[in-house]
Structure formats: C-alpha cells, structure tokens
Image (cartoon, rainbow, N blue to C red; front, side, top):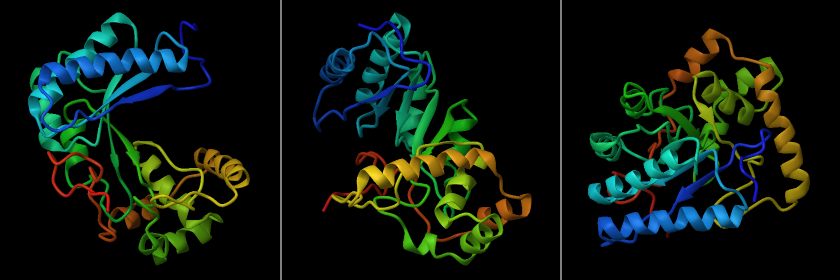
Amino acid sequence: MVTSCKQSLFLTTKINKAPPGTSPEAAGEMAKQQIEEDLAALGTNSVDMLMLRDSPDCQVIQAQWAVLEAALASGQTRAIGVVNFCESALGCVLKKAKTKPAVNYFMLHAGMGPDAHGLRTFGEEQGVRTFAYGAIGEPAPSQELLDKGALRKIGQAHKKSPVEVAARWVLQSGAALSIRPSADFALGKGPSRPGILIRAGIKERAQLFKWSLTDDEMAQLDALTSPDGNPTLFSSDGCPGNFQMP
C-alpha cells in the first residue's frame, strides 16, 4: 500500500448518492464503507480529495459530510468537497460543517454568465471555491455555443479552436477546470478512435496555460446570455432543473 498520492497526480473519489428513503444513519455508514472500498481498490491509504454528491434530504447530506470530515481528520484525504450542490444543498452542509467544502464542482460555460446564476458568488463568499465542468456543454457538446461568432472570431485571433476558447474563458475567470480530452462525446457515446483523439486532446488542453484572452475578449464572453445552462444539472431532485436520464 502506498502512503500518499504521487505528486504528479491529484487523486479524487466521489461518494455515491444515497438511494431515496435512506436514513441519515444508513447514508453515513454507506459513505464510510465506500471510502474504505475505494481506498482498497485504488491501492492507497489516502486520496487528495473526497467529494460528496448531493441529496434531497438535508440530514443525509449532513450525516455523510460528517463522515468526510472524519476521513479528513484521520488522514484518509487531504481535502473534502461537494459535487453539484445548488444553493440550498450548499446551505445545508454549511449549517453544521466543521470544515467547509474546499470546492463545489458544477457546470460552467460561456452563455451562463461568469457567476453561474449566483451560485458561484454564494459559494465563494463562504470560502467554497469553484471547480467547473462542462466548458462546452453537457450532457453533450453544445453546438450553439461552439458555433457562436464570438468564440470563432476570438479563436481565429489566437489561432485556437472554439473549444479552446471556451475552456480558456473558464480558467481565466479563476475557476479550476475539468475538461474532456475530446469534444466527441454524448450520452452513451465516446470517440471512435479514443487513443488517438485522447492523446491529441490532452496535449491541446495542456496548452491552455500558455496563452490568454484579452480583457475585452473576456468581457465579450462574460456578456453572452446563450446558450444558458443549469450549473447543477446533474444534481438530485433536491435541486431545481436537474437532468433526468431518458
């Protein structure tokens, strides 16, 4: 067993949502058991971050968060965060949290506005940083976004693709960013030549830190009002407008 994560990796694992009707006590036990199982499967004594998915039951959230706080105290993780927490879910965990979430992982792309309908300000005012996914849309790339004249014009000025411009906008706003190595994805669909596309995509994404948008370009993208989106698209029924699998 390794005692810590390699410095070249940042290792995270997400706690599964408790099934509807699960008691807070049972949900806490499920979280505790999953942490042990995940560490064993990964062959490590600790990860860099444990992340909690939301629940429509505030007491379930609080019970599971207490388990993550215990894991933090015991050294099983270096940090704890949340996934797709809308304002009500985030407010719930903050009511009893001894340690605030380090990050809230939610969708953010141009067209939604840099504040993600107020969720970003709400969290960051409490010290919860933004970790964004879906820079080009979810649960599939948004063609409306990628066809935007602003993204294409800005991309041409920097010799970059609309995908790169969309990702750079999120990064330059100060958020951490999770991005797919290929724009060829949708529900149940991945790249037809995954090895080639993923290697090329990772190389391209790594270049995001070597160039920047101008203040005027950032302002143009900040001002876009479409395509809009729900920052907590993949939340539980406890948050509004969540995505339902067909």
